[in-house]
Amino acid sequence: MKLWSILGNSQKLDGGAMFGNAPRALWERWTTVDDANRIDLACRALLASPLAGKTVLFEAGIGAFFAPTLRERYGVVEANHVLLDSLAEAGFSHEDIDVVVLSHLHFDHAGGLLAPWAEGRAPSLLFPNATFVVGAAHWQRARDPHPRDRASFIPELPGLLEASGRLQLVEGDRCEALGDAVRFHHSDGHTPGLLLAEIAGPERVDGEPHGGVVFCADLIPGRPWVHVPITMGYDRNAELLIDEKRAFLEDKLARNVHLFFTHDPGCALAQVVRDDKGKFGTAHEHPELHARALAA
Image 1: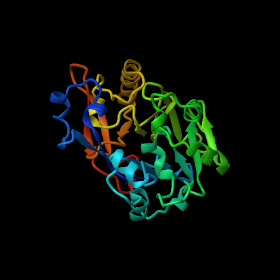
Image 2: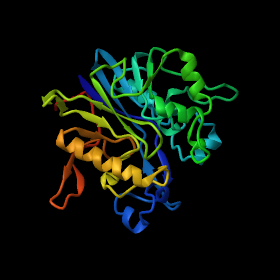
Image 3: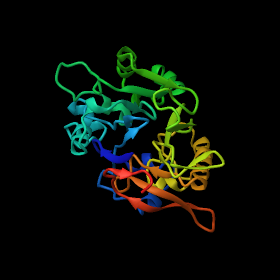
Image 4: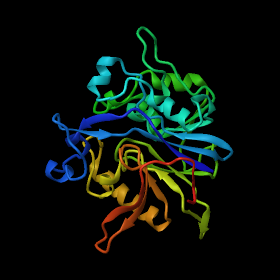
């Protein structure tokens, strides 16, 4: 099995919103800030093939579904559907994808499922041959959002996914489409029912997989958020997220599961480490993956 990091459209968002209650004097050490207080963010997907005999895309980024005025409002940099171009560079098209795993349905993670915006055209799904895997608890949230995060969802998307006949909801730690090849962890701190998909590693120790890769989604958007106290203003429950993150990192450290970041513009994959004071960090960082073997 090989892994590719697949870049989608990038964003510029307010740094204060991305770092919650951390002061700018702290977070500006980790990133570059423009005159509008915005920082650069990637919307990166992970492609794995063959995984359980299939070509699997973890997330789809923000895509190009926004009308021009909304694209500017939400800081989307490119007008074209970058994810499709990145798939082509890796030798794939959206028609080649057998499974799309979605951590959640916020527009910066699921908007890439949709065809690019065109005047007068209703939203339509790409990936005509894919099964769409979504957490069951999060599906309910997407169908009936809270006023606090309603603007983060694409109103038409749940109906399109349901009408495709290829929607698969996950309640436990496995899904029918991928079996034992992918283990799911669940998180509620950022949004109810967030799915954290772990590609099972090649080693087994006491029956547990070691050496895999986990898609960290918005539990840990990038390297700065590996620091346990750092959260986003977008998180629904920061204290819960911190507790979830600590347990998550302890588990991944113990099993040598590498972290894949969706929003870090400079790092796709890293190994989690811990110093003698107990602080988590990263090592062996990779800015991109090109047909990388899982065990490499």
